[in-house]
Structures are given as structure tokens and as C-alpha cells.
Amino acid sequence: MSTFPIAHPDTGVTRQVLADSPELMVVSFRFKAGAKGALHDHPHVQSTYCESGRFRFFLGDTSFEVTPGDSFIIPSGARHGCECLEPGQLVDCFTPRRDDFL
Image 1 (cartoon, rainbow, N blue to C red):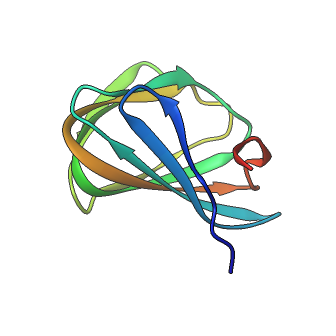
Image 2: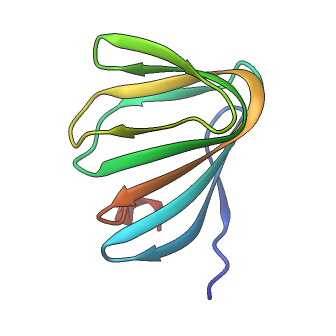
């Protein structure tokens, strides 16, 4: 079991890898209200689980809100991002692992 450092990828956002293997990575993101996860895309399939807070997600040409207990999949290559409406935590899983987070 490893302890991974906390990173600050965007203003008001912290990221910490919780577990990883070459095939899968679990990552915690904590957001302050108003913080944004910049629009981006990557080749990894991503699942997102909302642990707490409220978020507006942008996925391709659509947007939707998530609240505690919600989860969804982001396909490989899909442009996406989010805005935090109420402070909270998201738990993301990536396959394969996001080597850029290590």
C-alpha cells in the first residue's frame, strides 16, 4: 500500500491517487465551491462517483448535475469538465492507469 501526495491541478481543487495498477487507477478529487475541472479529454475510460457536494458536468455537447450517490461513465476521447456548485468530493476510476498523475 502506497501513500500518494496531494496535487493541486486547478484553483480550489486537490487530487490524490488512492490506488493504482497498470490496468486501473482510483483517484479522489476535492473541490471548493466555484472551482472548475478544466475541459479536457484523454484516451482513458473514466467512471466518476459523486461522494459529496453538487457538480455540473459538461460532456461533449451536454451538461448535467450530479449529487451524492450519482455515478456515470466518460468514454475514451470524450471532451469533459465540471464546475463545483457545492463543495464536495468526486472519486474517479481510470482504465488504463493515468501515468500523468504519478
